[in-house]
Length: 282
Length: 215
View 1 (tube, rainbow over the protein chains, first blue to last red):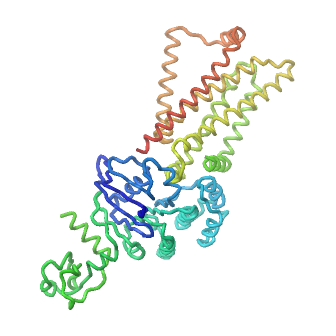
View 2 (cartoon, each protein chain N blue to C red):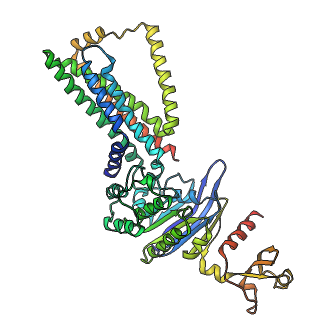
View 3 (cartoon, rainbow over the protein chains, first blue to last red):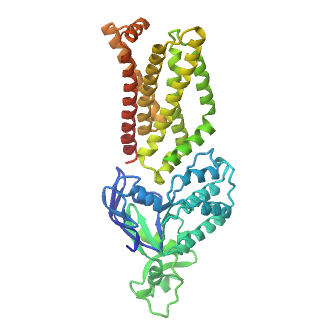
């Protein structure tokens, strides 16, 4: 069992939205970024992984366990951070710790206290007095304090300021230093994912547009800037996507179609994401 | 389960001290009104049955109802915590009311055990019926919508009973109950058994409805 997470032909139907035949594999020791616009199906995918909604088709396994049959065991193995942390407003971090101690079999009180200190979270201040960033940090502290093997974050960094976001994103990188762990992080802030992810999955309108190793994508594509005339002179099939600006043309080029003398910059994931979505809309 | 119950205790301590104090006041008033054929005796049971709904409304307000689902709590345990709070409160109300009433009777000269049993039995039934009827709606529709559904069904139920009583000329006078309790004391076990059956049945219904809510 080398996969932390495996989705095979996963389908979920709603009246106005369908998640269609999603196939994803997240190896252990890796971080996967699930990228998509709002309403693309990221949260639905995460809810299906955690058995929070019913599955209409396909199979999901988390650390070798079936998501339908072993839902509670899976939640023991997962540290989950949704976009909104909903501890009762009157409770403080100490009380949250006591509740969690009786919730998780592998609760690590010392790790929890260390995270509270690291995040600068006051133990006795009530949750309602916490800022949004502090609430998110408390959710992350809980997710990291029960020896979870898979961290699942659903837009967890979206509402945070850049400083806190950077701190938190670095923490996820630390988490996967142990090779039996993995992280699935969904976001529409592509730059966050670009920094830490080993794998990138693009979801659009309930369909998986792409799921590849980030390094493979970087090797496959590159960014290029020049004039329209220069672009027209490039080999056929080299230009995957371009946009014209008042200063010229910005393009995503396929490295395979280019000769070595064409200088191209490393790929910008956000551009690739936009390109893939436009391609899907055609 | 311990974790959820601890969270319920924190919630009770933080947000329900005033309702709990009111409950205590109602209990004293109910104890004092024992023997006067007053409906006041049953009011604490009804009031106690609303406290789990209050807890549920705080869960919704704080978004704990959604958040709790990411933890390894099964739907059955999440539902059970509210029924346990409700059950413990009903038992506490019964015990306190029995104590206050017995003390009052003793001070007046005679402790009427049958009357105490009748009061406890009917009280538990009323509390279980209120709580048992209320909670499934809340677990299915949430507290705001659940309350509307609950009141609509309650109005239909009470209206139906009143119509049936009028049609069939049923009279539930105190004398009717007095004769019944003297004639067949064992009959007072029936409301207790019904209360337990209602509460347990309601729990299973709530679990099923709670699961459906999130499918």
